[in-house]
Picture 1 (cartoon, rainbow, N blue to C red):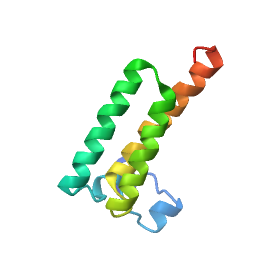
Picture 2: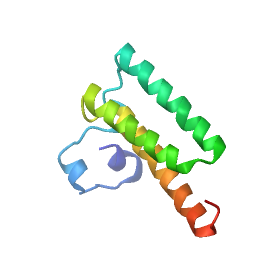
Picture 3: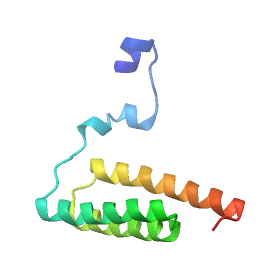
Length: 102
């Protein structure tokens, strides 16, 4: 509906046909104890990125995935954000591998 109203475009993809939930409508609440665990892992990811330790970055992202799977309803905003962060880390790792820097 928004695409049609703003761009005169009627999307026929599966998500639009079945009115899937959009990112802005996904669950975003997190229990305090889970939030604390996630924040620790995120700080470790940031430190690993600064060190250039991309193996640790990938391993820590996987730890985040496990925490989210055990403590959040799905789909969740953090699952999408984590996926985007993991994609960035993977691309960075592949670039460094290609350049022989790691």
